[in-house]
Length: 327
Image 1 (cartoon, rainbow, N blue to C red):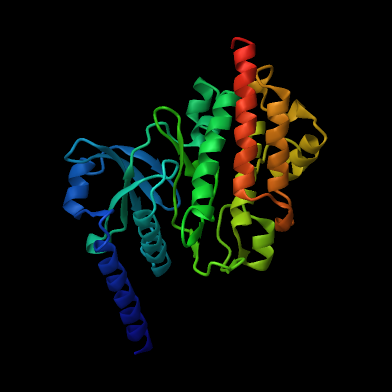
Image 2 (cartoon, one colour):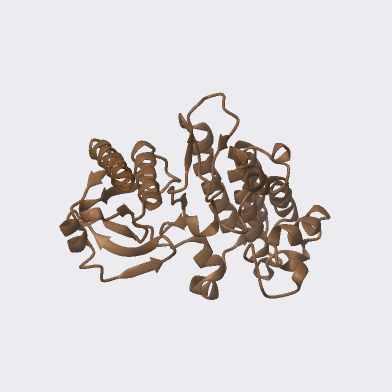
């Protein structure tokens, strides 16, 4: 009887959540038949991860979309699904991925996003795209500025405030003009009380990007996003992943390895593809804000608004450098 009652509670919760979702005007409800038609029966796979698979689709109006079909049909998976639809149906920003709609027919958990043909930042730093053309320093800075704008909107331009909780290179997508948008809000948390300093919650996130203070206290704050974004900045500077099994043992963790070098102004660890193409002052400004962002003590980290301001300056300096050198 207890099991039946628990299942009924879960079903009632999902029914109520889905009913609420269908009343949101900004996110279209798709039938499973429409999804199959849009994806040509899930013909073209764009990518696969622990969450599920993403397929290329085309809506009747000709708009291209990315269709995420989630694997996890558990209650936790359902919570994450409802959470993402809930958040993305209410927020709009040029640097946040746009949710076109969703499908929950026959227990499916399908999200339909705008299609961003540029792939993810991770693709350009480490994937097949990185072998073709390496991202220039000015391009990396522009991507960082765009992503910071998206996070700044979540933290400061929205009520209630939103903490993303899974900021990483694979969750920063690029359009055909290489403008960046933050995606994947399945783990995001809303800060419901305006004066709340944190949200106490079970630790979730991605190894290598996880705020150590959040990990030890289970207290999630906006500074947890700042830490993760600081790791992204280190990746942009060094051109290597947060955790690496190649090289020496002391270079396994990007934060622990890069921090002392950058604090000392030792830029020999900068991605070799950038050699001779960046302004030192622009690199220094970016490196210092990255180092501050990954401080273990969250109170010593800047806000995302402060990070954004520093990155904008670094970008302007690099633009001036390129113009003065006719590059």
